[in-house]
Length: 420
Image 1: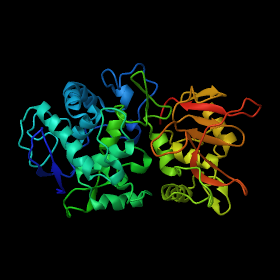
Image 2: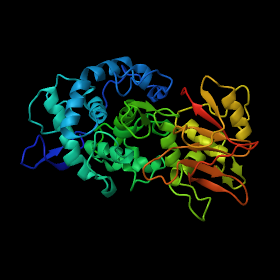
Image 3: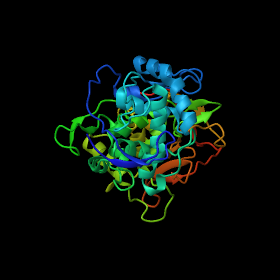
Image 4: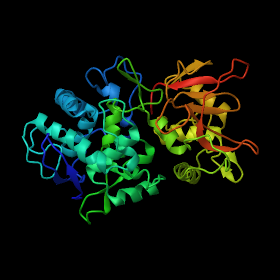
């Protein structure tokens, strides 16, 4: 058990008390759908089931037993969300991590020291208040805005979940091993937060407590709370239109991976310096003999290499730029051929003249260049992410803005419609 003390104001009481939070521990997870490919939202599903109506297995990728229990519990989550102004999806995600969505225990959200009412709604409200008044103040300084029922910054949600679970330093170290900055993104190393969000976060190491309170000594196979939050339509990675969660690249996973790999600004020299997360991904891909593009001495500094890594590493399409039709794992022409050869996965949108009809995750491609549209993302100063290769134009992945032409050789846009 990881014991972290926060100061909390719960259930409207005027007394400030210290409540430690239980760390996550290993239990029997075999009954859950924990294949890597399960954890992606399916934009092919009809209607708005994942957001405005009942959650469905098709619309979320969650297993049927989880979906059934979430739908049963949802009225309580929504009442607690209204009372505390936190997203109902966040309450559901934490409930899943803490007690597997049970409604029969006396401490359903595992707030150590909780002695309030035992009914489900009171406990859900207590969890919402704890998130607002204890977890958020424990976040990094730039992630301390009060939570809202909608429209929260994804990074703040991750950080809040990390605070709720205990901010173990071992997870900050694991974040660094995964290619993230432990000072600014420690939550990326927490399985409680991020497990099975994408290929980078697949089956992460976890503290079981068997070898010490801050020793990673097990493997987690469950969904992280942020993963569940996104799958339920709670995040800004999926565009919300008329109440429907929509994303060109499955629950924002490809989008999130793109902005994890790309610098948040279109910056000046040095142009080819990589973010540590992208450099780690390139090193791993090179070791595995996978395509990264680039020129001698600069592997991965390549538009097609960047898009390939995003699509594969996010899990949105682990086979992107590879297949029986073309085993070369090549540049843009190879990638366009791949998407054309898989109409079951990709919708060919054709040329576009503006961002009006684009969705985050859409891919632009022509014979010389390819990049991803990411939409408006907090802290990312462009609507697209791109890299480029060449002696005079080489740039590591960074923020950019979509551009359009109607000439011969203009960009053709593609949309991922089925993950995996």
